[in-house]
Amino acid sequence: MAYWVGLKEERTMGAPYLGSFDHWAGHTDLGPERLSFVANQLAHFLAVAALHHEAEPLMRRALTIAERSSGTEHPYVAIRLNNLAQLLQATNRLAEAKPLMRRVVTILLKVGQTPDLHYPHLPAAINYYAGLLEAMGHSPQEVLATVNAIAQPYGISSGKQA
Image 1: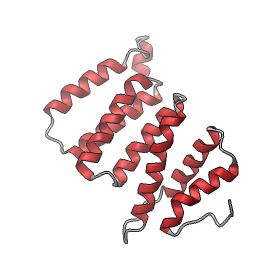
Image 2 (image 1 turned 180 degrees about the vertical axis):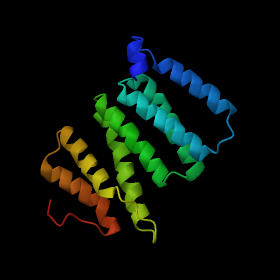
Image 3 (image 1 turned 60 degrees about the vertical axis):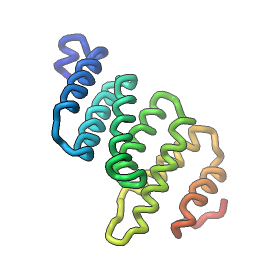
Image 4 (image 1 turned 90 degrees about the vertical axis):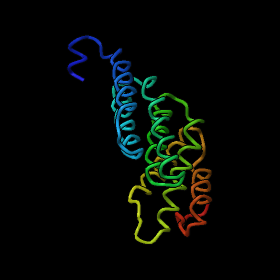
């Protein structure tokens, strides 16, 4: 990043990265899981640099690759969905982020039901989803009821009554 700041091109650096990635992706023999990972990492870098316009299509591409290669309910997909939802929230597109975060929570709940396959980020995903709902103006009772409705089929409850 310091390199681009030194050149005074930190606001335009996204395009060269995307062009290089597209060229590289067309010539690499990496499997789809690795390609999705690299696309996700580059998108995250661009998002951190506040180049949301460049990051979003790459995040969507990483998500599509992960869904095709691993299935729609794999933890890799949950990671890609989470990153895209966070980008959408950062760009004040809460209504678009909401169903993505709901999918994240649902995927992680399902993964948690599989013996020997526990995904440790479920509590953080639930908290992030709850925070998103609150940011959208849902009352604490509505947030609790929504989260409990998603989690109860998996035997998880906050223990509080909505």
